[in-house]
Image 1: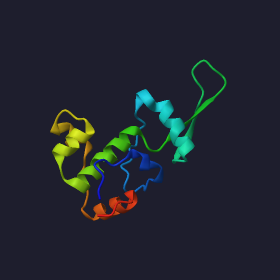
Image 2: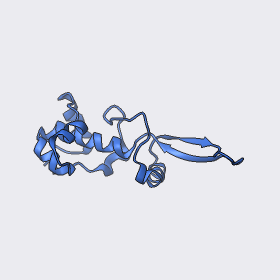
Image 3: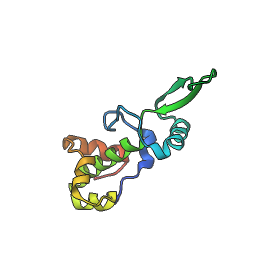
Image 4: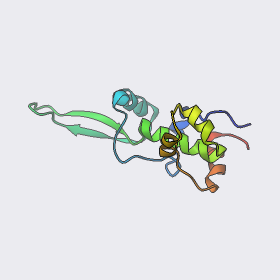
Length: 124
């Protein structure tokens, strides 16, 4: 049985070649909360150290390799790979038009379908 939605709670088990990675940090409104959650979940990332202008003491922050934006792109691409239904994806993703859906969902080779199902623990 295939669930209606793929849950992002599966992300701590991420498989790098399936997860679409963004080279730039994003997710401005939730950046610090996301950073803390990713660090506590043991997701990959790095420590950024900098000295703010006019200060002597350096600051540091954990910068996760996976951003909320990456998760949304991955979810959309995986959903499309599994279901091939743009209207369902538009509704599930909360997008107002198909153009936005096509920006998020990328066509993946059919060979990934079995791997996505296995990674999610879903039997076809």
